[in-house]
Image (cartoon, rainbow, N blue to C red):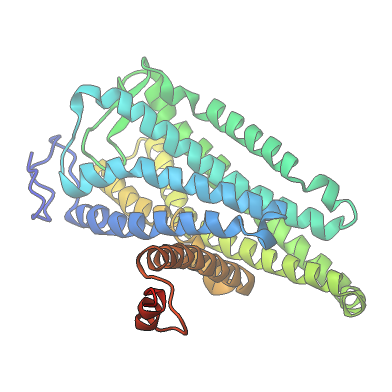
Length: 371
């Protein structure tokens, strides 16, 4: 296996019928590298921004905070693919590859599921605040967000638990993008489930159902806002506090819509590819498995953008989010500047003698005894 980092070729195939296309190697090396660099930075900045006073009071911001954390976990687990496919261009850590496969694919599936459904509940949260504004404070609370998150994680663990089975799941085609892990034995019934039924289950629970709920919720929110727009403007004109709430609600809607658009654009292509591949396997038609694997790998890089660019899109689309992030940067700058300033003051206080009328020489003469 060619392990040279300077080459962009896929090298000799690890398997006689499978190899990574050169474009896949390049995308995993430079594309994922770029995504990790900006993704981790953006997600950390998102978490810090959503913890600011103005935003953290809302349950929506708390959900966005959890979403940024889940996205960071997905990127963290994907680093292995970046090293194996993009850098070494061959399988690594083969002695513990089975265990790594189970952990990686379980965590990637779980974080994808959690991120999708957290975004669904962001939509539900805004829908409740729009439809039932007087009950929203009771229903849309931080406590309920924690309960919902625990339920999402529990369902996600149950759905992906088959990947933790040492008798079913492990290394499949080590070093091959999107096919490195899979059924331990190709002829078991689990293999048929994994290649035919599991992609459809995953697409429905991670993409199609969440997207449908998000779109329906967004449409109903828009219709409700249009119906009550004139009444809200009249009330808000006379109540400054109400006006601030309306602006906050509008900005949260902008953040929600931008996140949904990112989710749809980045997840639908790979989902369609998985559905097509599953039906081709089901129909037992003559298929180019190597092409399917590499096409899925290319679209997986696009999918990874969903877990990296929310912060930057939020900054572009929401003035409130942008202002809160700038406020956070100023606070950090003042804290750093204040610490440095205090140190300088202490040094001056300890080293320099007090002066008389701002003159150190006069101070020395002032302290000399008179004869």
